[in-house]
Image (cartoon, rainbow, N blue to C red; front, side, top):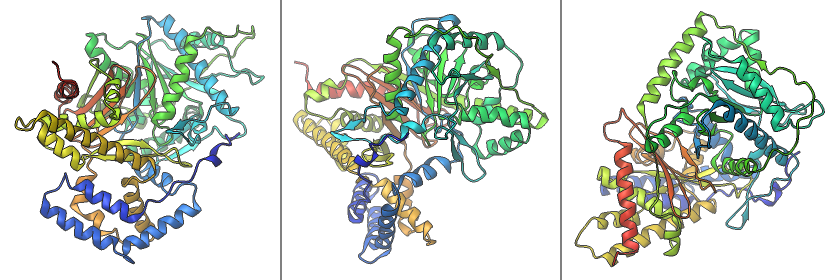
Length: 596
């Protein structure tokens, strides 16, 4: 049944055109030289004049808003995710790595995995029975529609764009999950014949049987096919599905509630490197000689449980996104504190079903190519995860500064120190206070950020003046965040205007063909705060070849960071940025609280 709280959530407004165009020009000021800026300003004014092209497209969007649940979400998912042809690992699917569990052997791995499966089923039961409490943000109820979609859904590769197949809403909803070990996939039924959920001990005994059926074999790692460029995978997918056995196995993976990857241990290295290794392991499996064959990257939810106590979740963004996933992880962690509730009923359980594939020469060749490409991609990604322990969100709060805005300004300053330049950066704001809302970008730098950055390392500027400029930069960012949370962000509105022109069969408006628009949307810093109640860290790859992705999770007295960059880019270096960011944070602390 659908949760019936949607009606209390308003529909997403189309922001006023003048406001967006003004915000767009303001966002370009720190990025462009004056003569380019005046050229773009003329173009934007022409687009926005009364009765002009902008006004016509704006009308189209307002009409669209009246006739759809959400005027931008479907377009956004289509444009940002489903039409992208980039491989899902690294480029798209985010991973969340959680604190290592206290064990180092396969027996405990299976005990924990069965508890985790039971916890997720418990969460699903809460969604189904409408017991999941409505979430609030800044006092406003949030749209809860994403939750039921998390289960039994999967992305399917297509020739021009992908699509999402959803099976969780049908009358005969799937009752199995997929468990992967040593590159072999198993269908595991997790409900008894009377519809009750299996107990932890039932699940555990089934995982033991899966283990005994999946000793190392020379089987081809089928899952690696899903790591390819989407067009390549789409072609391999069609070849694969010509065979009846393959089709059935693939369908079972796609329709399963979620997947659980039982990984072999990650090579243990020094503790500081281990955090980065662990995050990379969840993100892409560590390579074709490691656990990458245990993933099906198209699956909406995959839980990874390593033999060495490492664990986390990998999810596909066309259906899932950060905040609902954080809620799910909180539920799992709470559940894991509790003892196993029920004893197992003594009924014999059917053997978990191993999924078989017919692998002909063509498919074998597809797998070989996919292996080579994935290893190239993995070797190109530099992952740097660290815990900044000097202070957390309490420090900015004590000085009446927004913790997120504080970190955003620090990131811009650190980037500037490494690259001697500012760059377009996007932070993610939720739009779930609107019906069917997804996300919006909050962009930086702003003029206030630039003024602060230029003053900070200038010895002739007094400490008081620097502090004042810092406050202005942080407050300006907080104000921009508040705008985005009102539904008045600029980026998705601009995208909507562009897509509306395409929809109406018009040529793409000049402002989108302008070099300034290309520069403004070449996101060299992709950032994301995933505020979770736990010490978790999120990780994904940069959006552009010469960029970084930085995720952070601020706790009261420390902040977890992950920074990624591509090795093939000479200019960027994750470690240099990490070291500079730590120094920058110390100096900002000093600015707020000078040592006597």
